[in-house]
Image (cartoon, rainbow, N blue to C red; front, side, top):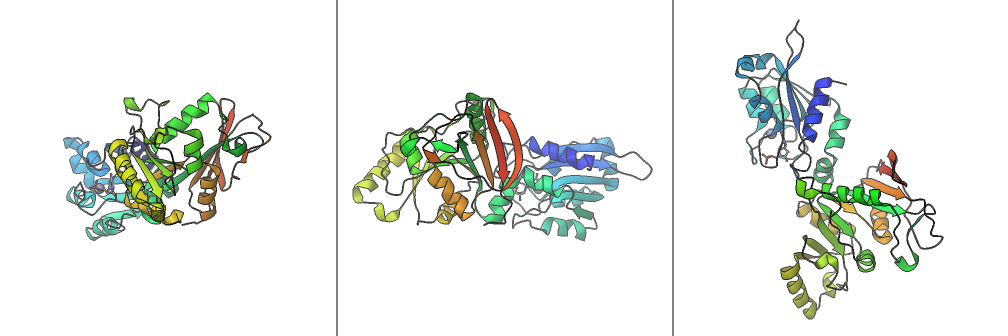
Length: 364
Ligand code: AOF
Ligand code: ZN
């Protein structure tokens, strides 16, 4: 595996949690003249949303005494250099202006404003371009970004905890503690890494969850509290649930037809007081996801209950499953969904076994 691209990928990850909805991007500039040992002369990464891109930071890091080496150097960039004016000027123009010798990338940028134009610009300027190096690692790194643009929906993680005999909750949905404290903490970390967290009506009612990250120290810069999303088709959820406490933005999906006059007043009251936005949606999950896409929500972690998890699985709208299996036994209750996809990870988290699967089927 090319060590310079691996380094660029590693640098890219330093932007995690700070660049969304932009992709994480890293860049390493290597002087590669014949007969000489390759030498890194500049490194950079996209550090913060709205700020300089990886290529610009890498070029800025090149010592003035090394600038004349750029024409004999290769820029290893994890993503196709951009060609458009966004919050930043085009990186392709910068590389051309600085007379870089060669550009090697992992992936093409699927952003319709770029999508091949970055490479075309570079090639027209006579720069050698290669793409597809460590492409799979590059896609995994920015799975959320690629899914969001290519599938026009957020990246979806289905998460649940089940007992060793396959139950996710007690009889009639009675909440039971299934996974251990360490798993619980890990889940709070996961929540801090995604744009949004979603639950169904029954889970909101039965568990009265807070859906925050209180077990993970986000105040030290480690991620953020996600937007909360709940399905409440008939607007029947009690307004004193934690979900409506105003501590985090909450999105409620409801059915238009159920909206009576009094509920509209209630809606306005809740919106004002509790940081809640209401979206009417048709029956389909696809429509709800379309609304989330419009709202620029790049990823969602779905934490149950079973009905909601099943509807995502049935529609094929999922990218990852993360499942805790405890040692406990319930004998009866609400059955957990069946895992599917390709197993990519297995570890013990305290007493629980965590497995992760990715969707290996080409779904919407
Ligand atoms: C690059 N290098 O480091 C990144 C790129 O609004 P802007 O100007 O920040 O542009 C954001 C878009 O630029 C983003 O959607 C993606 O297509 C590309 N990101 N491109 O050449 C980088 N972060
Ligand atoms: Zn750029």
